[in-house]
Image 1 (cartoon, rainbow, N blue to C red):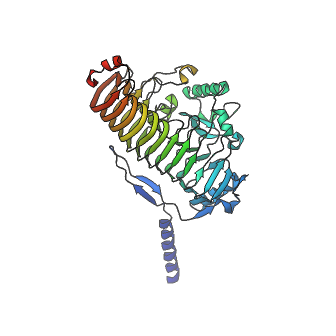
Image 2: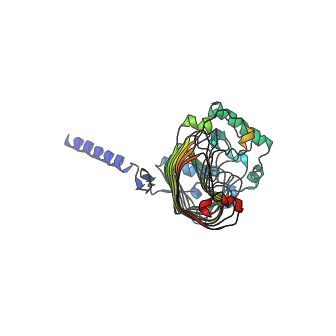
Image 3: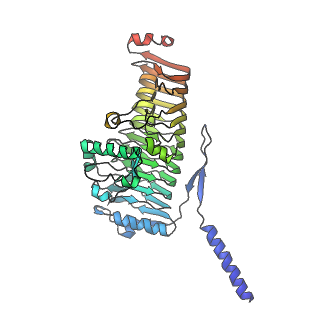
Length: 470
């Protein structure tokens, strides 16, 4: 009897120890910001490696390795997680679909070459296109409703681009498809019925699209080109984007888009983009009002933007609301169209509040700070206004800026129905201004301190409109 009792007790202890040791472990990162921000959790992946070569992958640049990579991910997931390792060499693949507790680790010298055959990215998966949910071609790297997902290592993601480049042109069938998707999203058609990977719709997939995931880590790797938005973190909760080298100069090649996501740190990255560099979004119109998820608590620091349309962009998809964004010590070394750009329109609704940019430098830009509440792009004539909802914009802070050349320092274009409020512009210096110093409409409570420039080369009549700068 005593032996039986002791055996039962020992089994209980072993079971308890097993449960304790298998509990997920996390590192926490405390991030300084001018708002309350919860510590970010980074999953500590089990020390178990699953090389894709062990599952049949071949590094000859010709063999399709999609199935072998999927097998490695599945095995790693079933064993509780770890690293799925891509060794040095060139590995051809179609889409990579993540599962929870997976760290896709790209060893130095590893190149994942993604095909550009659209058929390889079917069946369609749940994703989004410019703020509207739909089913489309699979992103090249895709995670849906996963917890603890990562891409790490010194390797490279490099898709073939020949076919995707053909789709850059946006012919009439593509624009008609966008109008149809806009109509479906505006009339509450269920997402599963919004099938876009058909006919000549040609909606390009994202490179990386993590959808409704928790505890994301993207660290150390290189990106060379992308069919669409490069890194899209959609409705994700918590993560770090760190030490990336991103180059993508195709159509709509944003660097990193955070959409309806929260608690993220982006740091020490290089962005060289054909569109905006760091973009904060929150969905489009009625689709975002349905999801009702703001994008919030985002810190961006110590990043270099070598080329791009905007250093920090907010919108234009912001219907779910954007708040608590902090960019510090970032630099646009060459030129950007807009340095700090908040954009919306009368269809968006939502809000933008408590956005801070400080300790930043720029080579050349059109506007150091621009807020425009009438940005519709191609949608202005493509689709009607189903509902009017004005965006509330307040609490915008710009401090300690140095810029070599700009057409203007700030251009604030609010909406008469709901003016922009509470904008602080302090310690901004531009060497040469070529168009005008500032333009303001429908904006209340602007605080301007120590805003200066050395040379004005624009029209003297324009200068006379701003006597403080004579």
